[in-house]
Length: 298
Image (cartoon, rainbow, N blue to C red; front, side):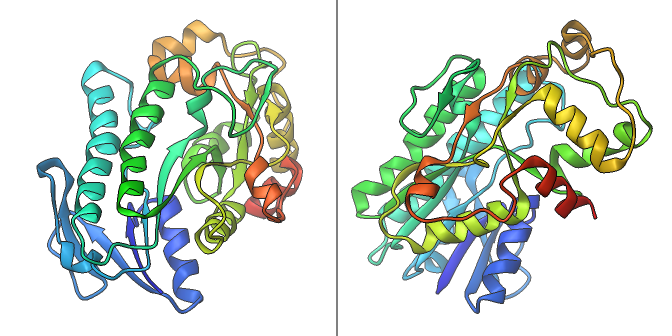
């Protein structure tokens, strides 16, 4: 299959492209710079531009582009960048898809488990309502832009990705130095639920969704066993064979250091489960956190 990928240089995109190529698919990355060969094509989402010739007749598009959530303090300017990198880029891509003579069969468009806001102890699946807050509202706008592809007859799936565990990048890589020094500690109350998925299972689940024509709409890319932040802390300490701190990091300190990202990305959480994946026969390699941490760290 010919598959177009945005955000191909990120943690998720790099792993997915490797897996797609291993299966023999032709992959074309959309890049913002001058293309370096036939496996790349130019787009400029800020200006609403994309090379439609690379999209014409492709089997699938996987849209993963977006500014990192935890890489900068959430100033008002950076929050605008977060929104634009997701909402406007999706609008650019979908507008191009709707103008094609031969649109792709399927669009997989990134979203986040942050759609659900703070669920407290309530378990939620893909039928759950949108929550409150910046991330929840962002995910709703992001998904609405992707859903417009359905008007062109494109099967559209919104990938509500949770914390993705990899020793090569993402949130876990940022945590590891602290935990390996024996300084890991719960955040805030530690009672907030964290949904997570191993990088291997994220790739496998994405391929599953890509190939399964019965899957449409939102899909939780989360493990079947979310954990509290306190449980996550203990598990990561076990994985790196270091004790963890008995005293939690106060919420106000995290807010001072990280702003809104602390409030919505660390101190609240989602107890989200992957109902659609399980209902369509997907089986996880790493269903438990201990399994996942052992796999990604050793």
